[in-house]
Length: 203
Image 1: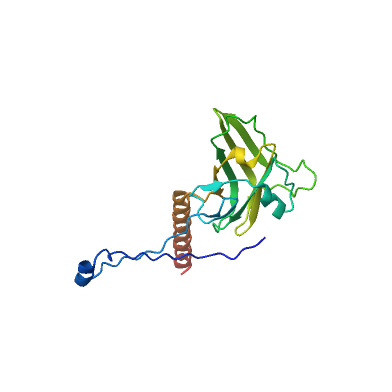
Image 2: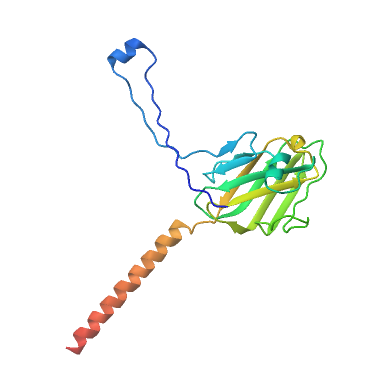
């Protein structure tokens, strides 16, 4: 599913606190901000614009119904949109109020009939001190692509609201790129100088 990228521009105005202040002149402030994740209540639809900003994750059985997935009382779905303009290679989730729930497991491939294929190829899920920690890696989620987190075995209300974070493909280290550039420039200068020496020797 493809979505058009949205640009949010927020302009903030300050200085209208009193009439007397307005007479002296208004202090004007303006800024253009990257949007935070835009999650629709109760948090089971979310546009993630900044991979460095965690986003709320809530599951809903009704969301599963909209996505044509199993929607029983112990099924829940979350729909996210990768609006970061980067390819995402991992997704981490934390649910911190699971004392009354059982163990946790996660799948790397579809093992329930009727489910679409998975996005990530590797997963690691654990429960420590009543906290579920889930990490999905491998594969890739391209910009503007949607992803669905599907859970079964726990009522969505029992899980509450968790925190998610997307991680993009690591960029090459800037120092490595700089040193590579210097090496290539030095090699180019050496070859140019050598070529000029050869031409002068022929004369």
